[in-house]
Image (cartoon, rainbow over all chains, first blue to last red; front, side, top):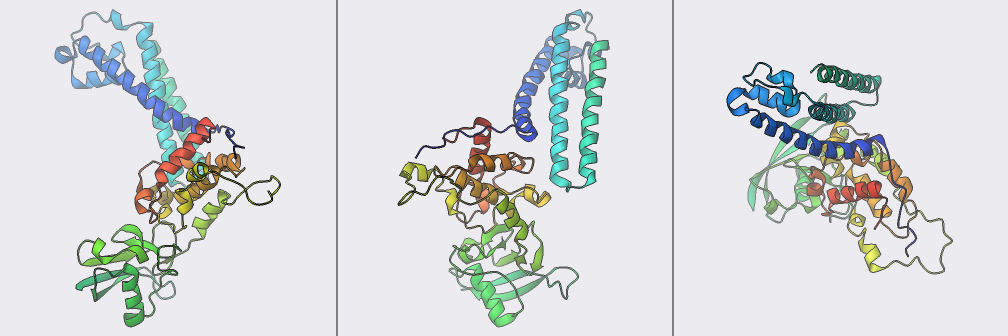
Length: 139
Length: 235
């Protein structure tokens, strides 16, 4: 009996976010490792400190190394790094905020509080994305 | 025979404001089951002790309870398989305690009913039977073993934190029909499970697989349901 080979594929917010959480984790590894490599190339071992390296890993922004001994930052003021920052911010913040949403849905019963928390997390997500965008554009 | 201490969770909603534990000292053989110890207490020490039991042979799923912190069937748990001389027996978690070791199973069965755990096929009935190959039957052989004891669902932290989650047992029973080649309700069941309180509340921590007294590979079954939702392919 082979009447059913294929069923309707399911698309829901939870399905999409379930995929997103896995893929974004991989993307963040790539971005983080790229940032770490560049931090080392620009002299992180001798000319910057650990906080600068970590900031550069997750948010490669030339403003973060402005106080170090790296003389010429022009190589890091270009579209490539801006795009990398956008990717890191978008995937990182969305990954984290979805994690918060899952925590809320795990622990909040179906009350008005769940709706309020969801709304708060959504606006927090928008706020951080906009704030980070303004930092990227200013750099 | 060895001397053991049996510590039992006790709660009588008519007389107690909060639960407490009673302790009993007794002799137990290595081949005694936890259910035998409970029967001994109820028969000879305290007739008010309440617990569910029916077949006493690991088939009906009535006597699921926490033994030394792990969900087990009291009728399948031998003393020789427990470490030490102290046995702590408590009701399963995540469901309201009604009395002593008895919990209200209604929320569990409400979730079970959500996934439509019954055969759906609107085709005209064949003269004899709906034929299925051995391979097609093997596809859901594992999940068909479920006895609805609730050990898996009540070992799941996602269910403890929010009982709107349908839980592993409901997904196992949905799996049993989704992968049945004779059934035609897969799409509807997958739609129900593709929800914020469906399969995506599973964090693959494997508590359910460890707890299952029928040794069903529950987390694997949940993964297979997730895969069907993603691919639409039942093969």
